[in-house]
Image 1 (tube, rainbow, N blue to C red):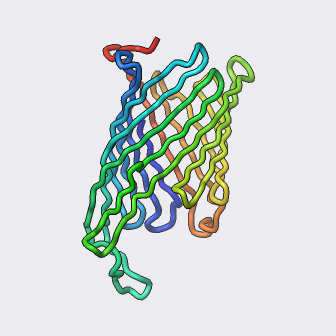
Image 2: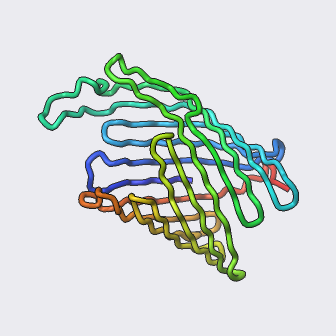
Image 3: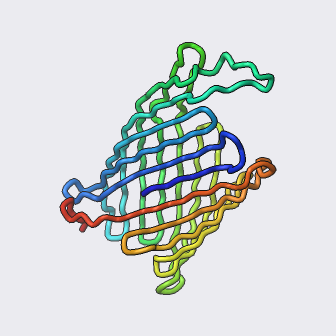
Length: 250
């Protein structure tokens, strides 16, 4: 999967995120393995992450399953440019230009599924780190928590409705997305998402060809940033490889 998000277009230094990830089920180990690479930039701060993950699938009867996952990786924080105060003087509390620090990163998650619903709980940056940039600045890597719950409802054989809620917090700020998507034959879908005091999001996606999926999302900014921001854009591409050598799930 390849994803790119350009947030708050029109504002200098607005967040830009690129994410590449791959995962596969491996029958021999009764679980899945994954690789995740993220490049994130906001202003002069750049964050690059690479992590490996493993998830064990535990059957809880014919209709229920519990996935338990762990991830381990490295996060690199870099200050990639100079910044000046409004009176054009340098800020002595910012790291020097091109300074960078690296810290280990651990994640843990649980994902429960039934025939029509699902529930997820996870955390990243389990071991918070304080990165000291030569005494001028300390970057605090705070722990983040995520909660996901959703339900799929089949209206007809070809048409289905899927709703979910996604919340995330760093222990200080809480943000929640309320989403609803409509699917037709699993090959075409549209969606609407509301993020309180931030944005109203529109989504469209379809299966381009066998194993290839494309999706696009647009965020209509509803916060005070709407005066300067022209919305946010997100593009998603996914390709599924058929690799029989790693085994299939029963």
